[in-house]
Image 1 (cartoon, rainbow, N blue to C red):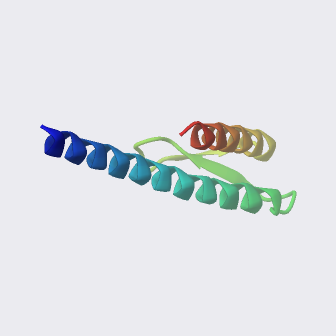
Image 2: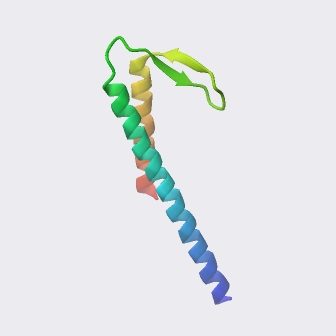
Length: 82
């Protein structure tokens, strides 16, 4: 019985590490997106891709930047809670 519980503990620890690494990767990616949006010239257009689609829609740069920052803050909070 103790061998099984040890294996289950190892599997849970591995899953947690994997989830933590994935979230860390997404945080880094989100930081790059925010930097790119912040450094755009004022006259540049910003498009956002619809989920599960190849369709892009014109969007406001400021709104997109603020939503990206909110998403980054949420991801950082989730990362700290792990």
